Image (cartoon, rainbow, N blue to C red; front, side, top):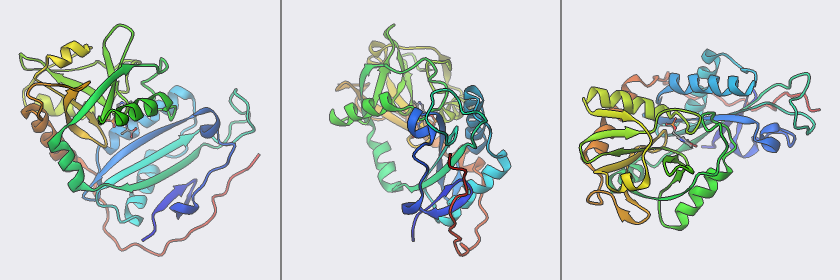
Length: 307
Ligand code: PDD
C-alpha cells in the first residue's frame, strides 16, 4: 500500500507530495517540526508535542495554521490511511511561500504544513535498546535558541554523521564550559555512582524533550533521586549508567562514550526500568484511534497562492 503524506490540506501519495521551491523552510530553515512515536496505532505524548509545537511557532512568530483539535484529526488520519501500527509521524510547519527575502513576508504568507509517516521495525528497535548504543562527544556549534524545535539541523546532522562514521549511535555535544548539552537528536542523562538520576535543566541550551519530561514523571513514580543540572564528559564516564531519551529512541542506554565503557558496558537496570515505565505510561495515555476501514483516498492538488 502506498505511503500517504499530508500537504496543506491534501492527502497525497508520498512520492507525489511536494512543496514550492520558494518555501521559507527550504531557503531559511524558517520552519518548526515535531516527531511523534506511534505504538499499537496510538500517538505517544500527543498533548506534550502539540504544546511544544505552539511554543516553537510563537517564539518564531509563525501563525498557528490550525487548531489542536483539527491537527489531531489530521495526525490520526495520516496514521489511519498509512495503516501505521508502529512508526513515526513527522510534522513540519514553515512560515510559508514568498519571494526570497530574509525579512518576513508582508502580508504574511500562509504557513506550509506537511506531515509524513514512517514505519518502525519494532523487533530491530527493541534489539537496539537491549544492546545499548555508543556515543561520541564533539563541540556544540549550534545557535543560542536550541529550545525552539526548528528544522535548522545542519550541526545536528553533521554530529550524527560523525557518530555514524565512528560506529556510534549518537553524538553528545559539549558547550565551551565543558558540560554536555544534549545529543544530536536526543537528551542526555546519567545515573551517578550514588544513584542520582541527572539530566541538564531546560534552558535555551537544549531542546526540552517531551520524552525527557515524561521520564522525569516516570522517575518520580519509581522514587528515584533526581537532579536537573549540567554534567561533564568526565562525570558521565564515571557514572553507573548513561542513557538518551527521544520520541524515536524512547529511553536507550549509552554503553560507551568515545569508545570508553560506561559502568560495565551494558545497559543498566535504571535505564531499562525507566524505558519500561515510560513506554507503559505513554501507551496507556496514548490517544486511541478509531479503527475504521481505510476509505478511498482522494488525492487532490494542494491549493496555494504561488507568488
Ligand atoms: N529529536 N534534543 C534534540 C536536539 C532533538 O532533536 C530531540 C528530538 C530531543 C528529544 O526530544 P523529544 O523527546 O521531544 O523527542 C532532544 C527528534 C526525535 C528528531 O529530530 O527526530
